[in-house]
Image (cartoon, rainbow, N blue to C red):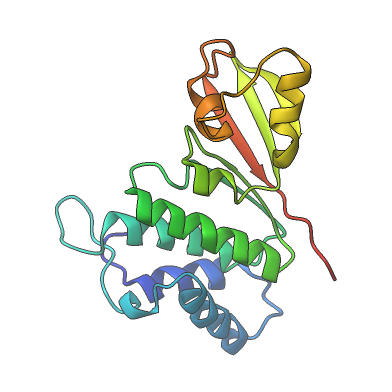
Length: 187
């Protein structure tokens, strides 16, 4: 992202350069405006993005603009590497809730890596993939992960949420916890 661009300009450049030429400019601009509203960044649409040297939008807003830059192209599949990294817990949860809503509302598959998610974020995922030392330990529905580990002799203590237990378990040596947000879509 260029620090000198406004948020709206950033999204317009993305849409104009990446969407099909056959799509009218007015439709591309309408998609930009829709995306600004969907990601809750319409109120900063005319602010400069900024960087370390130039004052601009906040880190959480910058993260949402980065995601919006991809979403404005209407991808059916979106990969996001640690979309909550560096955000406070409130902004992280807000972004993940918005991603789930966007995936559901627009029939998109969103796959993102999230390391040590809090329980509220963990609960947003439909399917998860757990990795340990680069190898898949579990892949399947989030709701069934505790049952899977119980069947293999690893029980989550009653006073811990499964997200906390999975992230901190020395038995699993979970180096990377990757959550796959592939939503079940109902037409």
